[in-house]
Image 1 (cartoon, helix red, strand yellow):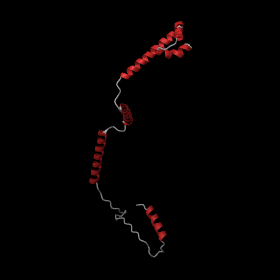
Image 2 (image 1 turned 120 degrees about the vertical axis):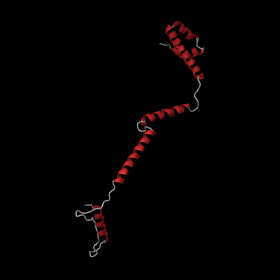
Image 3 (image 1 turned 30 degrees about the horizontal axis):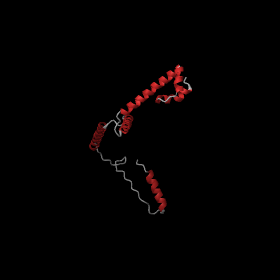
Image 4 (image 1 turned 180 degrees about the vertical axis):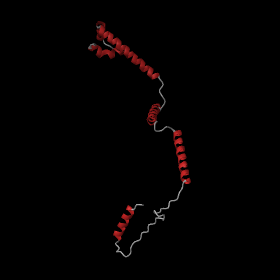
Length: 156
């Protein structure tokens, strides 16, 4: 446990300006003497580290920005790597799609048939719709009826 005089004057001791009372206390108290010696050693290590840090060359301008961008790019690559396997993969997919399209097109061309709708007796199925002129004519009602007929028409 440090006494108050050691706590108050330790910084002055490091700079070489400690009072006589401080030195007298250290002569009498072995616990404070050991603590001051340990703190002085730590302080000297910190000063040595500071002097070494000043002599270390600094990185070039933009170094930290490039490192941060590379970290972000690596994280994106890891996250989306499953969804972007590379250009070769997409070329293979495109080639396979074109090959499939060519095969299906060739099949349709060689198996082309014409469709002629016909009734069960073999005659072509023709629907002729004509408006009966003799009936009364209501334009809106006829138009609505025609829309209903067209919307519900099913081929049989």
